[in-house]
Amino acid sequence: MTDAYPFFHRVVGVDLGTSSCAVSVWDGAKLLMVRGPTGAATMPATVGQDRAGQVIAGVPPADDPENVIAGVKRLLGSGEPVRFRGRTYQPREICAFLLIELKRQAETFVGEPIHDVVITVSAAAGEAQRRALREAAGLAQLNVRRLVEDPAAAAMALGADARPGTYAIYDLGGGTCDASVVRVADGTIEVLGTSGDQRLGGDDFDELIVAFALRQIRERYHVDLSRDPTIRRRIRWEAEIRKRELSVADHTTLELPVLTATVSASVPLSRRAFEAMIEPDVQRSLDLLTEAIAAARAAHGVGWGDIDEVVLAGGSTRIPAVRDRLAGYFGWGAARLRTDLDPAELAARGAGLVARDYEPASLFEGSPVGLLSASLRLRAELAAPAVVAADEPAETPDPPGPSGPPAETPADFRRVAEAAYMLLLQDGEHDGLGSAYGAFIAAVQAAAPDARLTELGETLSAEYNRAAS
Image (cartoon, rainbow, N blue to C red; front, side, top):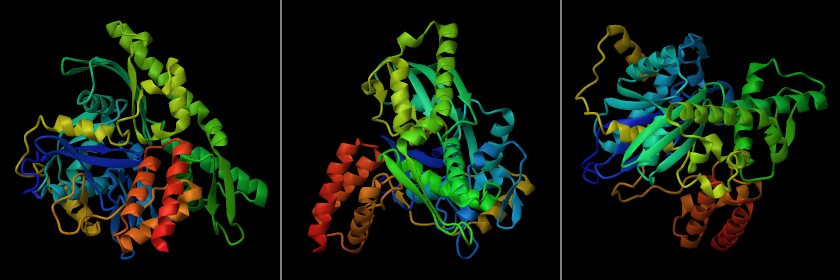
């Protein structure tokens, strides 16, 4: 790949989030997102096992949620141990698995060793959490050149494609919420005010759905399953999938077969009910935005009326209710919410831009014997790396095929999307089907309006029927 991109800057930017991760690299002319085996630019911040008992980072077996560790970033710096694979791990070790996998993917893309990284961190993170994050990077044999706070990273990504003005950055991820006010002028970015909460994000929305499902099961089956951690993990895995589906559908159903020998449940959930249950948390996130604006006013005289646009960062900003509340908060229409930038990639892109300021090292600079032995142990436990796709495909004879339908694919079109995907994998010669499938999946990922999804879904159905006949 180095022939295709000869000027890679070997200091990468990493967004190590609570629910997802991403890595970016500068190629000498533009910033590229490194894509994983599925073709996605983000990797789940989850760790599981394969059938051989080896650790899988980022791509856990979806049919085995009981043995998946998720959301561990919230435990960094707490000293709280994590039980996994029959033994005890420290949270920094679980995070190290994720960083090792991201490092592998970046090295496969660049074609050279990567030793240096800029990593994002919540603006509300304390010293213990920042130290644990550096330790996790050390276990992955990465030199941390800088920990860049999420609002600053998002501002950097914004500054690469923004006209002069004052922006509010609303970053609602899986586990944290950060709000900030930034000023872009003459190629410079100034952070005017920030606020954050490390215990507010999409993971909390998942837990609300879990509680809802457990109440429904208790009322229907007269059994309380809330104290069983294995069942809670299974329901939470399903909750995350259905939460995403509600970004593009009005109704969904949590399918929970064989929770116990006598309980198999299907729990309907409407978008309206979901929005009602997350309303207090959404309000809390808007309170953080108020605090950031108040800090900007106190320090720089910049108030609510001076903000030109709101930039959305973090995957949870795809939820329609969140966007509606933001537009209502400012009294604007949706047009002044910046939805042209992928919220799940924004922080990683900003970290990658910051990484350009640092020179790459020729080797990992950590030397303590204990650190090296722990790093070798974690690497030995990790499964062999998978094949990685890039933001721009390498010049190879076999370009990567389409990625599968995402979890938020509307239920009405999920079956035909899966069938189209399988047909394209078997025979990629169906140009009309490939175009229809690509357009539909892109609309799903962009949380397009229901009417547009229905239009594209019907086109996909027609093209599939034509190709399969």
